[in-house]
Image (cartoon, rainbow, N blue to C red; front, side, top):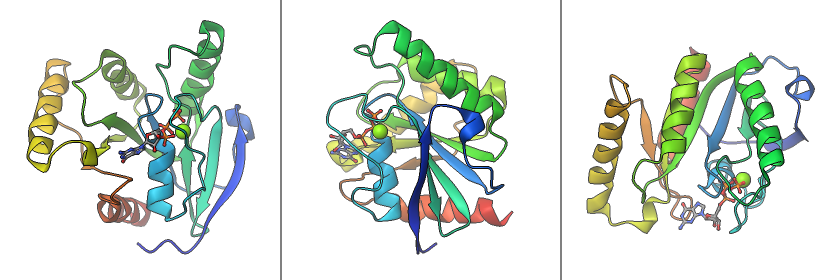
Length: 198
Ligand code: GTP
Ligand code: MG
């Protein structure tokens, strides 16, 4: 798929204020600093469409971007960022879970996982939550430029093992990406294109 237009539409913390147009929607979720906003910029080919930062906790709202006038990409705040106060964290959790439970346009969530690290409890819990809520999702491994090519397969295999140990019967569809090196872009866009055409 070719990206012809990518425009920021709205930021907010309430699902009821998200755009009403019934367009298919894809949301990026994962730990703070995993690379959600960077990946949105990479796949849309816009350097600064979504705001990124080396400091975790940059994205704090639900951000809608309209792509090619016919689908939405959604950038969400990260979870699991300890420096955000407990009270704020609860608010994040409520509007994030509201989003996943109420947003009818959502066709697929992309759960981003930093490919360098072993499976983290908070990600496995979030994946379980999505499963229980019935939200279709894929996994996107990020920052693949940070490990050698030969290690990528073994890290993915370790993740599969962790998911199976967490009661998943199989590894969901996954993508390996690097926003720095522009890898995984075509695969992701082809996937979205196919889902949009179903
Ligand atoms: P929050 O909004 O805080 O939850 O973070 P985020 O998940 O949106 O992460 P963001 O895209 O802001 O990126 C966090 C940091 O990781 C930034 O310093 C990025 O430059 C860096 N980063 C993101 N993707 C990649 C990648 O593919 N490779 C490398 N090497 N660095 C990356
Ligand atoms: Mg962000």
